[in-house]
Amino acid sequence: MISGKARAEKATADTEGGALILALQRAAHSTLHALGTRLAGEDLTASEINALALLADGQARAVGELASASGTKPTTLTSLLDRLARRGYLVRDLDPADRRSFLVSLTDQGRPVAQAARAAMSGLEAERLGAVSAAELAGFRAVVRALSEAAES
Amino acid sequence: MISGKARAEKATADTEGGALILALQRAAHSTLHALGTRLAGEDLTASEINALALLADGQARAVGELASASGTKPTTLTSLLDRLARRGYLVRDLDPADRRSFLVSLTDQGRPVAQAARAAMSGLEAERLGAVSAAELAGFRAVVRALSEAAES
DNA sequence: TATTGTTATACTCTATAACTATA
DNA sequence: TATAGTTATAGAGTATAACAATA
Image (cartoon, rainbow over all chains, first blue to last red; front, side):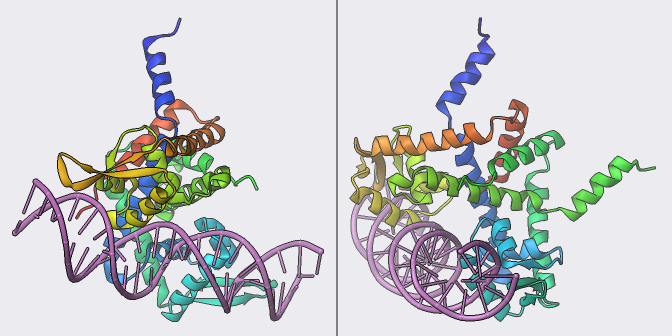
């Protein structure tokens, strides 16, 4: 015999299949928009904020690494990196270990901007997630990790 | 005295502030890409899939409702809705209750496509979240809800 | 006056295909 | 041959401002 609770959960799953992904998209849009607002003075697009925040730890990364870390393709990053390089925020150096590859790293000028981007993310998390428990955060990380599985193909 | 565990957690928080939002963006990109692959036969963009999946429940929605549900602006939806309307997937009818407003609804032709989009989301969730517990899913929902808070202005 | 949605405009994002240089 | 990244190209996403119609 199925309990009332189990039935309710099943009905929810049937009716709201796909709702998790829709909610994910909504949250992604909302956070991107809020970050743009917080960093309005820096004149950065959402993708630029994302790229800079990834580089904010000071570690140099190949274009391809940045692409997979941000969920885009190298071709997408070319013009974005051009723009940030033109503004003096980062440089591309040939990787001595593989001279087909460019290592992207922040300049002294770009470092504070990248850290501001990262700080805006931290701040937004702190502001919006104050009432969320550690267990819920752990669940979020588990789901996000599972959803980010390498695409089939 | 601070335990080793507490220190490790604090160090993680300091170093990885912003990591939740970066992970969110990565997951959003990954799921969007996977949905595009699953629906390759339908020739739909990510935003079109998102809009159709929202409409898949058969309920008509105003353009503004669709915009806020998908995290965009009405101006963004105009050309997208034009495209889907031209393909015969949806129609815009004047809202009799407020004649400034258009109600968007699926056509008989669009309904199966929208349901395919929604089914692709459900299928992707089922495939990638099989090993995730109900408690983790609940945590994910809580965090996503908190991150989607209405932007400040 | 305020609001809904479109139009006009201008950039950015995104991917595919072709190309260069290197492995 | 295969891979890293760029260039060229084309279409889609995004927002702001101006506008029409309605509230």
